[in-house]
Figure (cartoon, rainbow, N blue to C red):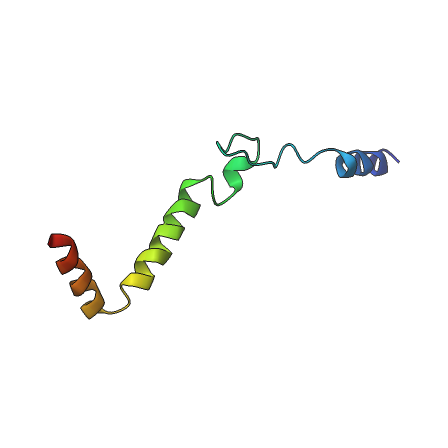
Length: 67
């Protein structure tokens, strides 16, 4: 009975623990990909891999950044 009561309470409470503010200040906010280091670095790696799929693309991008 107490387990059922606990589940009902958890089900109907606000999701304030998992809410993500713009500052990522929440109890579980650090688990979201937008708020932790791993998620941010994965986005950067995906962008990098889109731009540099071949060696020629990488060389061209390096030449553009040097200029």
